Image (tube, rainbow, N blue to C red):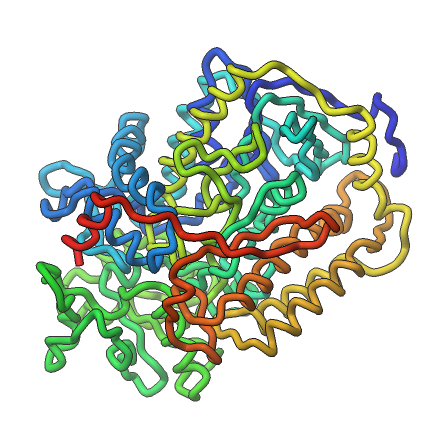
Length: 607
């Protein structure tokens, strides 16, 4: 069974639209594409296990239920500012305008949001947002989103292929016409013929040692698109969430939602000092130093709402935590302390409040670390969390440079620029998942069926089976070596010499990964799965390292110790990576699209 590539070994499915990935973006795309069209949905794990369920804080949308001053214009300006103006301007505009509609639509489909006293959807503060903007369900918002989308989508006539990994996109004359994959359980091959394919595969966190990402996040969509001829963009911008668990080791990196800080949690070092006040950017000023828990204020315009410094942007908070750890003021296990229990000083019913607002966090620390967060602080530290970079797509349609190939969610670039604001990820899934599904369906309706050459399918099968014919390097050894390399050399703080080493080392690892061997057969074989994931991990790691090396400045989530300041030159372009004629990865600079007069005016009004 290990070497058979007979046609009888393949299961073949014909669809108009194929969605790869069943998180928020994939489900929303499938719902939008379904109806009169044949829609297939492929997910790497079980349906309902997508990484979206781990999104806790909320979904950002300018509903203005808590502060009536909020608007799509303010949300647009906040997103552009958070992304350091490297976003493709139309995407933040579409996102800000359409997010409220998508959230209300989710509510109509049965999502149970927390409520204000007058029955509206409750919204909370989050880092980088001017007003309370995150609609939430305690700290389980992503889980509720997936539940709602699945419950609604199950009636749309969508075929679901669970525990199935796609290893290759099939093309014909430069157009994507389907995908090749295999069942993870029994190893049987599947061929999906489709007029349009939508990638919704999430991020790249498993290229790093410490990550909040689940095991599926091996850069599959990024790599599939790149090898099919699409371009990747903004890959240097990898967000390290400031707060992941650091103890016990078995759960290191698991996310501690920003909602903890949104509900009043504060960061302290081992000296019991609230260190975030030591480094507030010039845009902000602390006007309440004598009473620091009241927070800081924006210095310009009407930005008069106080925020704690713990709710500055994620890249800034992560670097401040790293500074405390490196300078010897970290916690016992190499993190800092996040304290929500202190609110008991101001709130008589604080314990009940914490359990109500942060139920997942309470149980997570109670069960996994033996810590009661209503009574004692948590040990936290930065964890690889989110990739701002991804497949370069058209802002309106989400189609890549390859006809018929679309992308949405974390595997697509353009919305977040240099840094994503918390909560924008979930509304991103809804807004652009919907758009990708809509335009993929339109593309499918306007184009005829076409199928890949059978030789291309045979080649994909032979490539998938190749590890069984070899008995060389262990795939786990290669994976662990890559994760250590990326964590150490292309992590939160970067320098030129280390990234040069990383680029060379990744290319060496890529050569070694191309000849890894596995034993056994195709049934229940995690070593084989790991071997097939390696090419994806190598592709995205090389892209991150190359783009980070090229950008000789610090901007957003990309921080270089040797170039700690922003440089005007680098504010004008996005890094675009593509496969050259010789098959090697190449990089070029692409000018950032100019703002329209209306967009410029909105940003100016919201400074």
